[in-house]
Length: 179
Image (cartoon, rainbow, N blue to C red; front, side, top):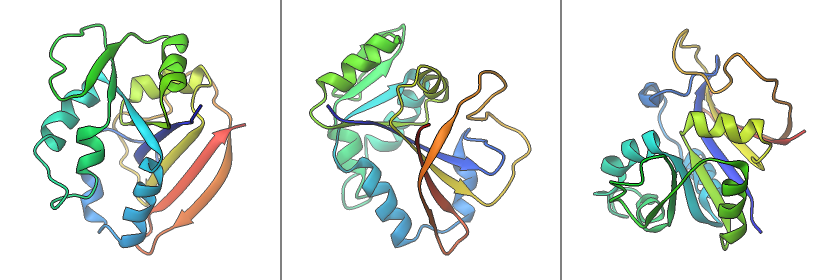
């Protein structure tokens, strides 16, 4: 059984919504390697419906020559947490309804790790249900002041720092596990 690895681009004040603001920070080889290390070993992708619908047009036409991550996103089986199983055309994709047991089944049936990105409502629920094995936060050195935050008001989430890697552009890759 593999791990559930969540990856988010986040501002210092916890905003994860539509991370186009990350473009001001140039991608470096070590940053690309960090993202590659998160997806390495992942045999499945778990996404919320909104993120799936945002990713589909962004990734479906990309090639490996344009972006080395394209084959992973396009070819890897995707499990989409949704109450609307129709319209999952960017495949391979299957619909699942959210429950801790359903997420655990995805994890148990995967031949490797399970990658999760974006999907804030899903990630919040998985953190509350203690289903996240690794939380990878690519944290940018700015506070946005507004926007959807990963940690909204509500239940306390305790984590343990597993690793921290600073990059030359001020971005930091933080890896947390369950406390």
